[in-house]
Length: 284
Image (cartoon, rainbow, N blue to C red; front, side, top):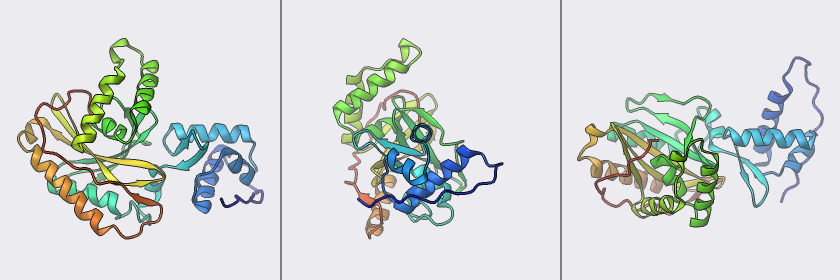
């Protein structure tokens, strides 16, 4: 493992907000070393107190800009950081396979498409492609409930049963009402179904969502795209939409199978024909 070199102390104008400067310096440190870093490495390299460095890193994890590996005790930036500058030059997002797949699916299906990641017990909304080719983003990586969305179940499909049950128990311990408590066995069963089908579909009143994992992973993170539609508008068209998703992912991933630094290929999901009666829970 390459050593993280200590940087020279920077003289900063007194009017600068220290915490804001430190956030950017931490992100720049990851950019220089391009690997996961431990809190001690970051504190030593930037000559910060370890206690305040740890608190700052935890805050960045909580709002979805870093992810933390509890086994290796390392931090690494999430895709949300890539999106911050993706409009300029990032090959993975800026006109890369993730945005290309989302745009093409949105255009061919005529539906808005969201791009998501899991942030511990929450679903983080990274980006949105509107059906009219306009792009919009939620505020500051908006996060929603992991257990009440097709997106959440698809994001859980990459985890083992024990990890899923542990997450469900943690979520249950934090809910405000007993009506929001979810049985771990029910979640495992629904995740198994999503994993088997290659997609998750949910209907809530007038809205239906379809979520599919992308066959890429960056920094050990799974990315999921979700299509949004009014239920009455897509009645009887679900198999056609799934076919569009499958063909688009296959076409783009085959063309992008050349080397992409930091990006690993994952097994392409096998999308089975849609079955009636999707899971009826909260959407997104």
